[in-house]
Amino acid sequence: CDRVCERLPVWVHPDFLTLAGAGAVALSHWIVASTGASTVGCLLGLIYLVYPLFDNLDGKQARRLKCGSVAGEFLDHIV
Image (cartoon, rainbow, N blue to C red; front, side):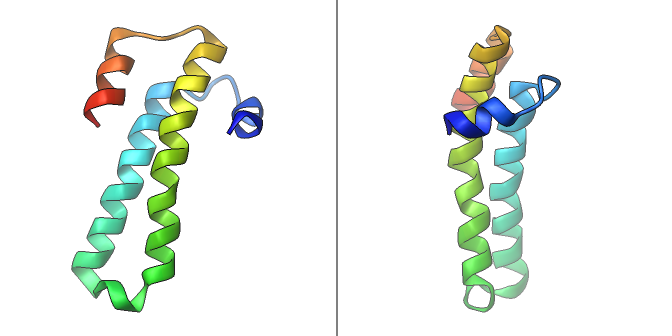
């Protein structure tokens, strides 16, 4: 995860990473509801793995940019 964080551009805000991870989970749930899990199981697994990666990256990016905030802390624990 450290290698990925080092390659993130400085303009990527940590809150965006949190929301993108939550969006990936929402997308996977929508796909299951629309098509059924058996037809696209591998795709769902890959999409679902995005969330923990982004959840880890948002904290590392916030520390790297020194831009931690109360809103970011809230998003990290609620989303």
